[in-house]
Length: 314
Length: 314
Image (tube, rainbow over all chains, first blue to last red; front, side, top):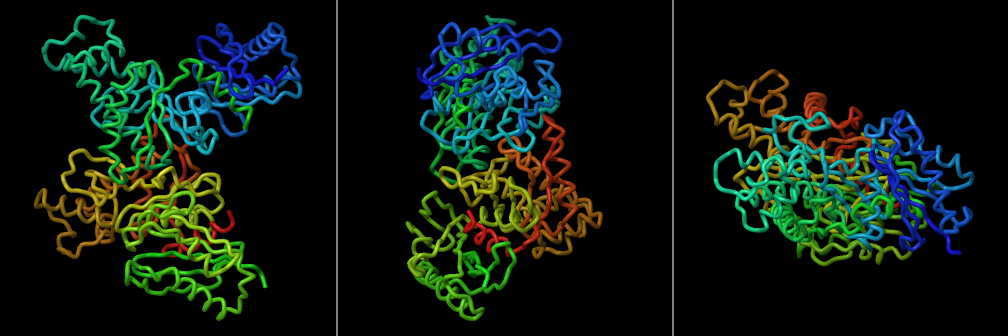
């Protein structure tokens, strides 16, 4: 029996677990609901039970497990300390140590979910083969992760890769979840795209296919309308991508990675999105003609389990 | 005889050379004019001759030299390749290999001057004792360097740390040296501060002590007037520091270092400058209460020779 890696992605709704070969082939995966009772205090126990069950089902003895990695939705400090995970209600916790308690001798690694997803995309996804990668995930928010020299960069306070919260718009009056005003996330997340489109629609009464969607308008609708030539939708996406291009230029002039990966639901817009981002990235990175590549993510919702498993190979 | 490190800082005007103990004590330094003939083709030979002369004067045998580091004013790729050094007229060169040709068996390392200065400040300067450091040098331009885990970060195309060229002002009409419009350097370098102050003075006819300086106004004058309560000068410095605070917040949400170091001539303004930068850094970094420290550089023009020598210990 070849030895395997386990990757766990803890979210507020579900906990995903994947078993991988050392080379990064996904052997099996499961998804269980997150037990939210008592500030998710049973989540680690549930992960342990799930791993036991999967090992039994796939006839894997625990000696064959190289280790387990866990991605959690909050900042992780270097020694694996989690001060707070807002989405789970966790406070003052060492989740890796807790899980290791269920598997004496097993290596357990911990990382922030966005950083871990970046590691997954660098290992087996859109940035496979690159050692220096910055991921931006355009979903409900804008998540980010930085991989340098094949390692996750956490930063002193766990803030490395938090590119969703760079300030890019002075005139913004609404507040971001982080408490700031004018964060990238407020414009370029799936939520931000819809908000931006609605603002554009309110500005004038020009005809737009987006008006037919009313309150059910999604980021996908905005992208689809834009692709189909709807002018207001396309202008919305120009704004969205201008700020993404700016953020990518900032990251270039800080860490200058090999490749940027755009993930999250919005990245399904593909070349329409990437082309616009690239245009502004080039415009704002005049210092050199050598720019990083920008690619779309490939692993979808599995990026987290891939990256979590990858941490064990560190 | 204890073993020594040699650090060389190659500039367009002069070449500085320092000899250091392994622990970072400066033993001796020299400064010779840069021979600009034939696109500075003799500079490496001059460095070699100067090292020979210093070694003789201080009675150091070449076996006692652990190695030599060189900082050069241009991007350096990983294998020590320099595509172009505009200030020197160098093209398509391997300066470290060239110097090593004069000292068979000696280790020679190469780095970009701003990155090397950051390494110097991290080793023996304002950030001594920290492994993760971002330096911003406010001089004729805005230089930058990123040190992560006690290593210089070069980036794929040598652009890591080029924070002087992030785009921060859409309405800028003048061009930056890099070809862009609205770079940080255009506002927050010594040159940029003067330009900004003059623009402020043109906006209205309010009395300002800065008017007395006419065309000889310097960044130091602007800071001094601001400190003394001159309103236009202080408003100028608010703008300058707002953009610096923004840049520092961007770097935080990318690499989240332990400490930021502000160097260059403008940093002589000390607490007046740092206090204003900190105010905007805090304003634009709402995602966490844990912010990096911001300190002033300590090594002045010697940062380059310190950092160059430090590279040999890598």
